[in-house]
Image (cartoon, rainbow, N blue to C red; front, side, top):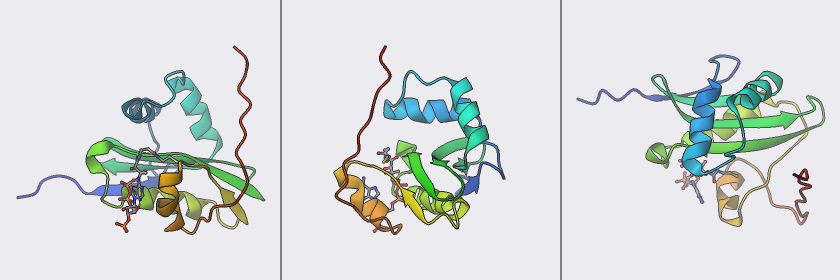
Length: 137
Ligand SMILES: CC(C)(COP(=O)(O)OP(=O)(O)OC[C@H]1O[C@@H](n2cnc3c(N)ncnc32)[C@H](O)[C@@H]1OP(=O)(O)O)[C@@H](O)C(=O)NCCC(=O)NCCS
């Protein structure tokens, strides 16, 4: 008998996402060791996000940065390694895109190998180059 709970993808507004579980997902990917749970709480309060849940465990996360009217950027799409390939990433991106309706332009940046993943959700590459300015330490 299969007693593993199904995975549910829900907006943060429907099921609040605990910041410590987001930090754990980042950690599993080697991302953002400098980010604190307190910073994640502030981000979750400010912009739409979505969580993928297997029971009480957060197994996936995605969020965005948005002006709420004209432009939005999807950030931090991540799925726990043991549940990849099950459609969770696709569902997370869809959940964020839905929360961003009717913003006319939604953008993201990613490694070249992930372009097919995002193309499935309707994103198309452009010839723009992403520039970052890092705060000096
Ligand atoms: C990228 C990631 C979020 C995908 O999540 P996932 O739950 O495994 O993806 P899904 O199961 O929803 O896959 C949806 C589709 O995208 C494809 N896909 C998934 N990962 C892919 C990858 N790395 N490269 C190309 N295609 C990919 C799948 O094959 C699937 O296509 P199919 O329906 O034709 O089989 C996940 O692999 C991950 O967390 N990676 C590490 C973090 C990362 O790089 N995040 C992206 C930051 S921009």
